[in-house]
Length: 176
Image 1 (cartoon, rainbow, N blue to C red):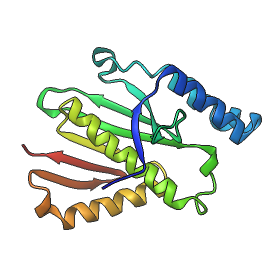
Image 2: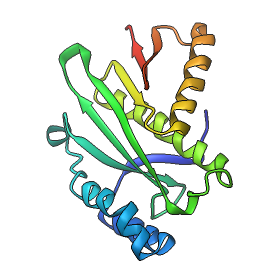
Image 3: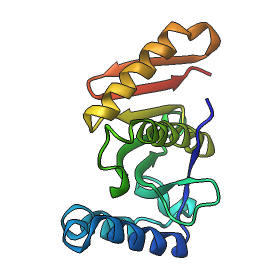
């Protein structure tokens, strides 16, 4: 499934550009109330070194091609427990540019799908056998339910993969 965005680690410059861009788009007061805590958290959760990142929540950006600022910030955590390693997508914070979700529905859906695909790719890097995606918002939960149905209906194309909805979590596990 091709998307227009990718999940990747922030550079210091990209993080600074993103903060300035979102502050400009939201306005000073709205930025402070909606995103101030998010950026404070994200700034202290960008230590991507393998040893430091295990078990810690990390901030990644969702970027369009050649962009130097993110259109979303994603909270991902990986747990290494031997053969039962897990990667979890916990939160997605969308740029204030897309606050009107009805107007930007296709872009927001692409960002969510990019976050999911990026989390699955991260899980491969840490040899995680399970990926858990949390439907924190109504939109993300709806997307996860659709993804669950799609993957369940096409399980012949996904040998060695099991998929289940567990409350607000979509769990994707490999049996190999």
